[in-house]
Length: 339
Image 1 (tube, rainbow, N blue to C red):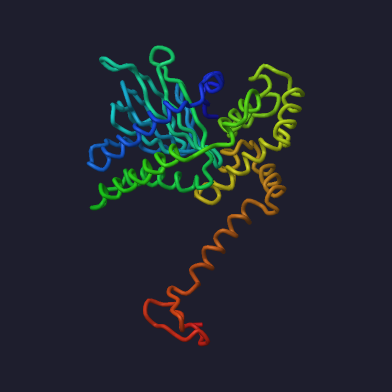
Image 2 (image 1 turned 120 degrees about the vertical axis):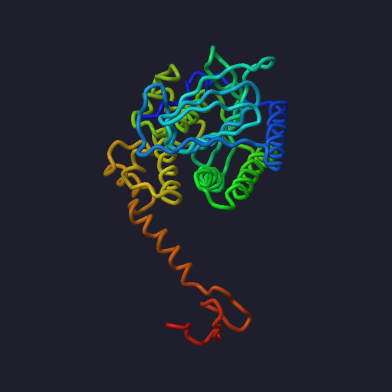
């Protein structure tokens, strides 16, 4: 399993202040300006398949984005290594194992801005050098992102386009980076998050579930042990404050992640089960059907059927006719060509 963020770091990190938000806006504004002038260096490691565990490395089931502000980050991957300098951005594709060693600059301490993706939620945090060479969260904010698929599509497209050699590659990358950075800039300006309104152990439990939902060992007892309380106390507190049982919350977050994977990736059902924290794909299928009323495979088939049906719709609709082709219109009451 991937190595998650240190829970204590996640829980002791401060929520972003207005000053932090202003700093984050300025960081994205600067990156957008650099990208618009073709001066924002993009680093993307080669993808490694299948997902594998590597010593001193960890990976995530969603992309991760690093914007270097001060100092440097030495990244190492199974097939390569590189150094991320100030005013450079790194997009790490989902499933790519990586490790980080950070360094202060000549006159400024290490600092970078990191984006992570959860289920209908994205996080933005400033990282600092917590121990020599080791980064950790300084301040963090969670944002509700019902359009999370757009962020993921842009991040995935950046990494995929980076590996191509088409004649318009640089222009496409520039457009994708501007769209991605602009989307982050907008959500910092206007976004809010329900998660930020929770306090105490409920907030910590939700953070832990969203951070580690891919861990098959995640359960109420595991969360309670991490938070230093009993499972009964945590379950009662969570239900009292949220009106939802913690066990149901864990399953809901996992199933939401599986739905997103079914809709946006080509992963097999078994791969999605493992990525969603289920060690047994058959059990995953049963839980999925309880939540959605259909199996994961049937759900994916329904998505494909919907896409096919959309392709059968008219290409152009006029006030008195519809056109199913590239230039052979017919009256609405006439059958389509080839019908």
